[in-house]
Length: 363
Image 1 (tube, rainbow, N blue to C red):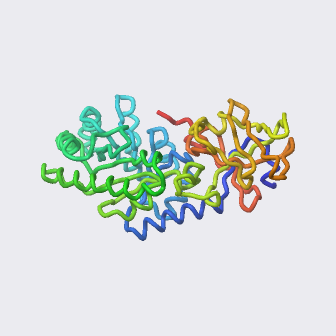
Image 2 (image 1 turned 120 degrees about the vertical axis):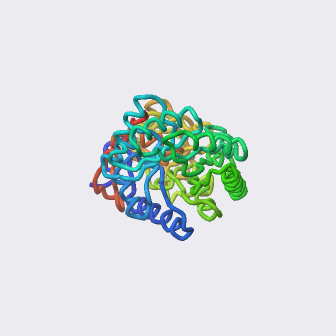
Image 3 (image 1 turned 120 degrees about the horizontal axis):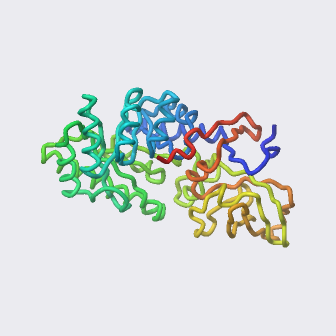
């Protein structure tokens, strides 16, 4: 079947581009001597996780226990849950998960460490943790320096806990230009190295510095002291990655195939994909969506089931009701989570389908 024979809207993945993206990041990590632990929240698909591991990844990262359970059931045996796990229900699930996989957990509080420590003591197998550090995103973690070193010392003193290292996510990189990424990473990693030294002075030796962000990945992989990288979006890329200089349209591997269902005026078109397919992330940014190969088309807004855009009539290109377009998402991670499956294509031909098995696993 030809790609454009598919019913719409559909999530479509170009296998050739996916494979190139996976190998490129794996090769860069190998060259840098840094362990690659990609974040699977982007694709939520065991088949892609297996491809990442086959390309050289040492393990995977997930956001939530539900994703970890799906990946472990598919045979993945080394998982980082990059999220604080709190409460009896989650600790019970973590205990079951640790029966089939090595599981590292991130945290930024003694309260979370105590719960995990109780599990470590009960099972006579300490829970391995990363302490999350705030290097500029201002989401989780304390700032680099003494504040984090003091927390690491307190967490390390909790029975049943083994602190492996420091972890951060440079999500604030999404708000800067490509020319600023290098300086941002330099500050990020320097702060983590200095914090590790302060931890050593307090008697806590840390072996790991784990970083994670697709736009900063290449700079982070070359930074002294980094032992592990956790990029996620690189598998598919999106218009945000293009804007940040981390991707091009040619390296985007995931698209929403949509049909033009209306041409209300000469310069307006409507497709059958809205926020329930493309999400509302970054919809305040000009050019937040792109139509592959059609720079004469620009989206204006999305409703739940409608995507409304403008056609530049002076460019001399046509667009008719019934035509199909490939839309590059602004933020591919939530887009994937809106679909039950992805259709696989190679050179425009449909090759199969993968279920997005961890879709909706947000607990």
